[in-house]
Image (tube, rainbow, N blue to C red; front, top):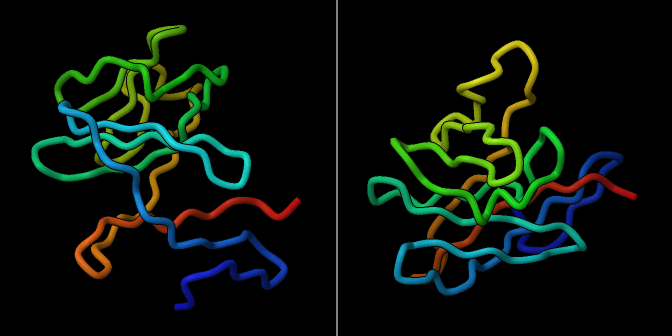
Length: 116
């Protein structure tokens, strides 16, 4: 797969180097006008959309508890391994996750964003 954008009538797919993580293994970053959040859960680095699918809250500022992130706006809880909402199963969309890989010794995420 190429390292740059791929546009084939679908989403744009970028391989993006992750920023340095803070002492808690977290970061928030922007790419192509969208915000993403990085979490470390049980030694695994997880990249998600940076906004809550419920009402757009800053999910990267959420508290991590039992392998899930709690949105600071409305307390929706998303499992970081699956993206599924733990509190509103029939209502909430899952939190989008993005694959993480190691490239030349540095962590990268494969980010898919809609073509505008």
